[in-house]
Amino acid sequence: MSQSQTNDKKNFNEPKKANQLDPNWRNDALDLDLDYGMQTIAVRAGQHRTDEGEHSEAIFTTSSYVYTSAADAAAHFNGEKTGNVYSRHTNPSVRTFERRLAALENGERAVATASGMGAILTMCLAYLKAGDHLLAANQLFGSSIGLFNNYMAKFGVEVSYVDCFDNEAWANAVQPNTKVIYCESPSNPLAQICDIGYLSQLCKANDILLVVDNCFATPALQRPLDLGADVVIHSATKYLDGQGRVLGGALVGSDKLMQDAFTVVRSGGISMSPFNAWVFTKGLETLKLRMQAHCNNANQVAEFLVNHPNVSTVHFSGLSDHPAHELATRQHHMKDGYGAIMGFEVKSSGGLDSKSAAWHVIDSTQMVSITNNLGDAKTTVTHPATTTHFRLSPEARAEAGVKDGLIRLSVGLEDVDDIIKDLARGLDSL
Image (cartoon, rainbow, N blue to C red; front, side, top):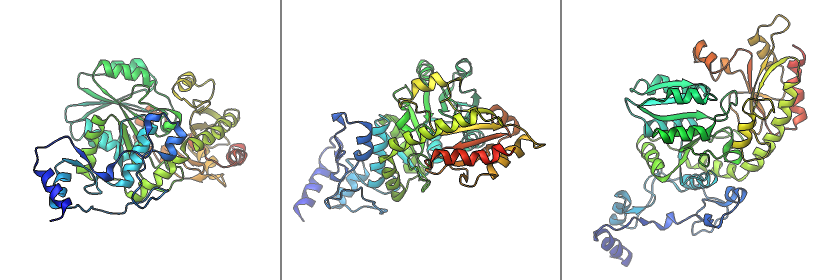
């Protein structure tokens, strides 16, 4: 028997001590206690270099791991050692992405998932049970509403909705069994803003978890945990990647809350692939720079739209007369950073009804991509009433503000004059 095997056996048979850290789980290569800036964290945090000394993060395409002995394997499985067990729930590439995102959000820990909807499902399974009440904003992605109404309600979770910007409505809707308040800020597709600080106070007074979807703002613009949220949700598919390449999601929060989420991913297999995690990790390197450029373009596009005679309403908090402009300015820490998602409503014209008018504007584009994805380097456009929110009843769409004349625009990184000219083709010819 080798000396290492003897030591493993000795350690395994000793009374259980504090959890040992596997050498492969050593701390972050970047000492976060040194108070680095966001861009430095985005480029360097979370990486663990192997003995090969690689400069760029490695991709660990492995399903399982090898141990030095049976005792070493047992110690990993029974929790005596913290280390890699199985890539469904422990993978070095995924862990690097989780550590980097947690550092950017000022969270203690992140848990990665297979998609953004997988992150929301993980949240539900981790923090809700039959008999609990989920209170959510009306203004949500259609699939989120479908998950809550069709599946969480099916398993005994009561669900109700309020206007995201109505603080009094939030307070009045809280019930004794309310366990989670859930919102998007900015929201999909109207980019509406929730008062996260107020919701945090409401939740703390009633022992409720506040969960905020930060997909549209990202930590480059807004850190909900700093504003009092308990859990942050991401569809990493969007801006964290930034180029529309792969699917993924994540939750960020305290160690305790993330352990609850981790056990769901471990048991349910809602796992992120190592390759996707590597793509997201590389995407985070340029997140702040990209979001600044996205916001600069979006601010100019919004000004064009609000002044166009065939546009009736522009839903974008970067506009000075938007009802949530002051709140968004306060909650978003990047100067003039209001995100790059906006909704705009076109006027019925030339005998066209509102849906036909919206379709005309969309179909007249030559450069902009007609697709339901967003957060891409490429500008994308979609008609929410017939795509992302089409499964909702007309009444539910009305409550969410999704009208037939509404177009959702995700402003990309092309030359802003080209984006404006492409939108003008349809708007000018209504």
